[in-house]
Amino acid sequence: MPGNVKQKKVHYKEWLGRFVLAVIVSFLALMAWIGWYLRDYEPFTARSYYPTRPDSYEVSFIEGNADITLPSSAHDIYAYTTGFQEMSIKVRFSMSADELNTFMASTLCQEPLMEMQPHLELYDDGTAEWWIPHQYDGLKGCTGSQAHTHQTVMAAMTDTAGYVVFVRALTY
Figure 1 (cartoon, rainbow, N blue to C red):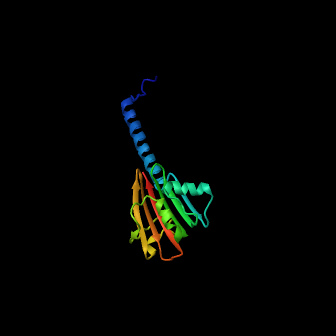
Figure 2 (cartoon, rainbow, N blue to C red):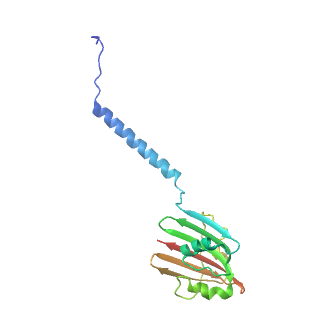
Figure 3 (tube, rainbow, N blue to C red):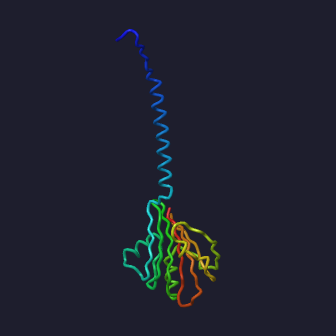
């Protein structure tokens, strides 16, 4: 080596500290980006509408998640299911009034339907146009629980020929 060139000694601890700091800052930035990107992520989401009673696969999916048995007269069926380990489902359908007792026997409700006033809830899940129990007068409802499922059933009984039924169930 030429005699007048100075060599600077590199301290590995200094560079190691800088490297670790850079890795930590990069990791935190990556986690913040992933969190922002997945902020509206729903592990499983299904939105469905059936103007008439669908085939057995769709019926069993709705019935299994909501813990109900849809009556044979069920039509205009809306369903919204979301979750992964905790499943949440909202179902709305119209049915013949004479099948109400049979349907209610399939729910988790232990008490008879009673007058209720549901509060207005605004949803950002695509159900706002059909999940509207607060718009019905004469709404009757009940709640029930069993094991790891909680269920709310509401029936709009304004038309004596047919009812609009709302079911909300959460399995945890």
